Amino acid sequence: MIYKFIMILLTLASLPAFAASGSLSVSPAVVMLQGTPGQSTTQTLTIVNSSDQPFSFDLKAEDAVARNGNRVYVKAGELAGSIAATAVFSRKSVTVAPGERTNVTITVTIPPKPASRAIIALFHGTTRMKSAGMNATASLGTLMTFALSDNATATATPLSVRPPSRTANLSVSQQLVNSGSEPVLARGVLAIINPGGTLVAKQALPARRVLPGETFAVNAEYGGELAAGHYRAFVTYDLQNSKSITSSAEFDVR
Image (cartoon, one colour):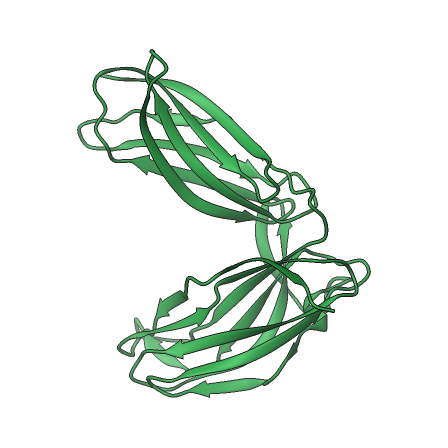
């Protein structure tokens, strides 16, 4: 049985290739899936070498969990109900020549009582490079999240607003907390309202993916001009199950 796709984000995850010229990238960067325990999914991952040297990688999976509000990665099998322990790659290792792309498939089966709701499918670099006089390796991965219900929920801390100044843009900050048992995809919007209730500015915020128990620090700037006066800033996050979270704070522009 195959997991139903909610969304695949096709944006490439990439990083500079250190001493080499060019970069490495893997796609998709994120795969979001929904299903039930016992189901399996097979996904194709593509790594692209745009540098001028070959790179080698071992393929492995690790569980992604939140501890003390922070996301951490745990070796496959260390947790009872490890999703990563079920991962089977089509290849154990790959070498990607300059200018080449290589596909690898991963098959994952959700255990009866999964310990997490996400894994990272990792291209673990084994090619040694010199970076600032030190040996380094390059690793990339795809985050795979698994929702077992539509009960995604989150909360937000009070919104903090720093008004614009001569040297800095208006900025807002708060923390987004996944208070439920399912991974959350939160798409945010910043809106600024004047005392008359008129919308004077609106800006989309980057989508946030927050695992159960994880706390994500939200920081955003608005670079537009605002006339002197009193305003209220609203930040609204829409979750994947049509729930929303809204918070606001007043501020003055002098």
